Image 1 (cartoon, rainbow, N blue to C red):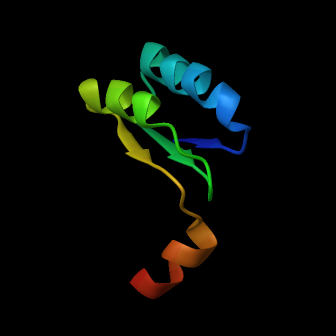
Image 2 (cartoon, helix red, strand yellow; image 1 turned 180 degrees about the vertical axis):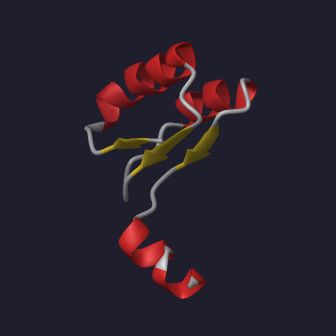
Length: 62
């Protein structure tokens, strides 16, 4: 899984690189949203999470 903590401008490049390299999942941190990148990753069935934080999402699950 790739975890992205970058500015919005670089998200498309990172998502495209993840698709090219065969990464299984990409996680964009809180406030990081790029719908175009999301569509490209989902087009190749790569799992993607946007605008989320593990410290917030995971504790309620366990």
